[in-house]
Length: 460
Ligand code: NDP
Image (cartoon, rainbow, N blue to C red; front, side, top):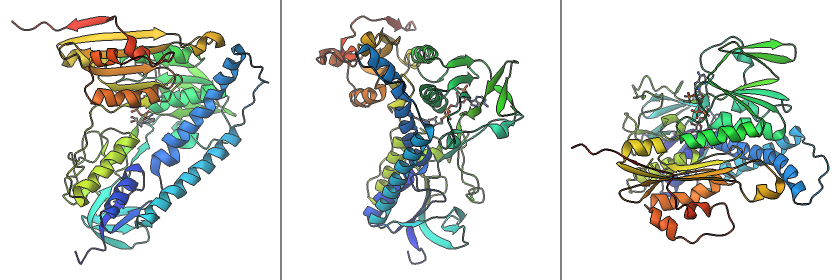
């Protein structure tokens, strides 16, 4: 259209935005993308990627210890946080350059600026320049929130700052019980910090299968992390070089750092959405349909800003599906069911499908298979750890409707099991699959004894 400068303007160059821009451009659209910070978004710059690098670093402490049982003599290992952070920063800069290069190669115009909507077709940049766009995609992600204002909240850091600390804290209090709190508690503990995890509910990882939650909490405690449930942080007092963390029910913990990981909020503020009367749903995200279209017909949104399933691969899929739908002539809804996911704790968690509770609520017969065992590697190392696996099976169709793993490489395992579960594999298919011996994963195809079977009474 003549009065449009571009066909598509994307606000936010994170995982979802970059994918959408690249695919739309490959279909021939004229695309511009605005990014106020660094290209790559949360995942690349201050999320999944740097986190996983820190996870790798944190696991060497176990490896050094375990090596002794296998005959190795290892000199007293020393860890240097600034080296890790500098190396991590170099890798993130490399990835950012790769993302920027991809945009260039696909002919996407990148503007390093904050962008906001003036009307449904006009984007205003920080310089005051205006760009007219036929279609707009909002992919601005989410941001950590710090909860209700408590005394001393200004002393709390979030995951954003955790990646850039000048030194490793000797003692850290982490508040929260979700992915980020659990992962960072394990990272800091592995690197040698004294960690206390403060969670407001009964047990960490609400929404996960109860057996997984229990197993992981025990494992974390076994690794020396203090996991304390049923409290919140009520105040943070600075006292010299340390902080006194006051809990809601009067306990006090001394710490060198206090980190809050109590959820993230969609980045919808300051985008000019109010003047467009764009619909925001109850969880604070932009309300979109299955094609990621908002209540304003030419404006779409993907990723965490929609607060659907806040995971990088989901944002990427949503961005790709948007481009296929709008520019590729292939209307593509995104299926948000059966999304495999991992928590990169120590040990790792990998899950797909229903929890036992969900299966019991939704199905008339549920068969539960579970096993807890000492991984072979722990025998000679003498490490006191156990792995856990659980399959939930629809007792009527024999389909595996849930798989839950806590143990080494659970994230890798669940990626592959995810294919089988999505394809509708039955327990009989699992049983018919020959085991790979000796592996941890073979337990998934050798569980024969039902731990439990639940049947719902059928109404007369
Ligand atoms: P989550 O929503 O997963 O967890 C937030 C935690 O904070 C919950 O335990 C919640 O308790 C608690 N909480 C919320 N409000 C308060 C409060 N006012 N006071 C005390 N505690 C509170 O958020 P995260 O920040 O951990 O992660 C954000 C999202 O990022 C995740 O949902 C996930 O989608 C994504 N992510 C994914 C990762 C991965 O794939 N490995 C890694 C990191 C993040 P309650 O349970 O009671 O609500």
